[in-house]
Length: 112
Image (cartoon, rainbow, N blue to C red):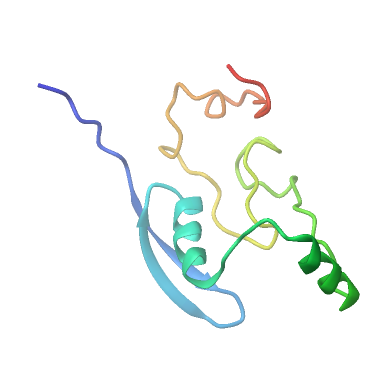
């Protein structure tokens, strides 16, 4: 008989800024909740060269992700959208055995 591990989940209130639209999402963490809502409103693909040229000619600026605004996590380990002002991680979001939970710096470019 295999033992199933139960995933801890919470209900997150996801509000779209400027619109006040509230969605309640049951997820394991705030990033999953945000991703769930965003997939209904946005599509993300690598920009094609023609798209880049056209957009830059219209004055669209390339936005840089701000890696220092990672709430509750060691900088650079996980980076949400820069405009997200969501909650910090709370106890239980990371397993105690995780290096991040122990406060250790993690280099995502190095394989363990």
